[in-house]
Amino acid sequence: MLDPIISVAQLNKTYDSGTIALDSVDLDIKAGEILALLGPNGAGKTTLISMICGLLSHTSGHVKVGGYDVVADYRKARTLIGLVPQEVMLEPFETVDSTVRFSRGLFGYPPDAGFVETVLRQLSLWDKRDTQIKELSGGMKRRVLIAKALSHHPKVLFLDEPTAGVDVELRKDMWNVVADLKAQGVTILLTTHYIEEAEAIADRVAVIAKGQILLVEDKDALMKRMGTKELHIQLQDTITAIPDSLHAYDLSINDDKTGLIYSYDTKAERTGITSLLSDISAAGLVLRDLQTAQSSLEDIFVDLVKD
Ligand SMILES: Nc1ncnc2c1ncn2[C@@H]1O[C@H](COP(=O)(O)OP(=O)(O)OP(=O)(O)O)[C@@H](O)[C@H]1O
Image 1 (cartoon, rainbow, N blue to C red):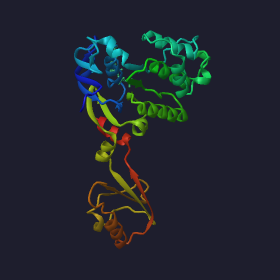
Image 2: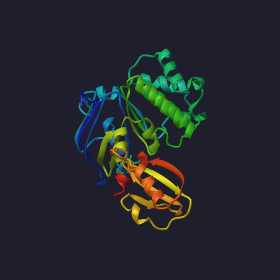
Image 3: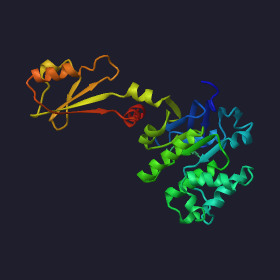
């Protein structure tokens, strides 16, 4: 990989309690990509993000952001990073506008009303600029967290569960915001429990469980490699046993015994569907309906972490 913007090497974290939260983690993130970090509760996602952001000390290993070591060159590395934390931490009596302006100042940037307006408009917060934080809905507060993180022109944005507790409409809005940021060249690392979120917006997917990275792969390639497709064949009459003449096919009877499910590999030269359908009719079974179903990233994820 050419010059990753984030480079994590052999990172370990053992908390004082003895919990091993990260176990030899290696992870490179390319500039401009959206990487979704998926993992069950307690997998180590927040620990990893906090360590990349230099907020938490590590037991051993190295993390570089934009070429700067997050411990030795903390300040330089931190200026490149925008962090949207999982928990909403905002001053309730401040307005949206002052929250974002203040955060920009903290990073040493001079006031720039035009830039702040652009950020607020991008996040559909412009109309709320004079509203106090305490009067905003939960979803709007999350947007303010993003605006705050963007106030100092970060090159890398960390979104820790950006849409937790947000309704479906706002979630899709947020996905558009993330797509806009990517178009501007911002690298994004996002953690999420909504796997359809990763499926919708990520370029690559990393799966972490028990502090270990199980896989990092291009999302489309992963779905192609691990995904299977099913053909659901509804029959005119109920079926209790698969006819002998169909035993060569990977078939099962569906739960309500009204049809067959055929699993096939989309990458194989032949799916076998044509011959299956003619063999079904030769076996005296009458078709009523056909449907295909593709396994989702969620199915793949569950498969990966079930052990
Ligand atoms: N400050 C701490 N002290 C001791 N153990 C901790 C601390 N913070 C986290 N842990 C433990 O480290 C492990 C990883 O936690 P972490 O919060 O990184 O997981 P996560 O993947 O972000 O989980 P979630 O999806 O629930 O947010 C867990 O076993 C957790 O209990």
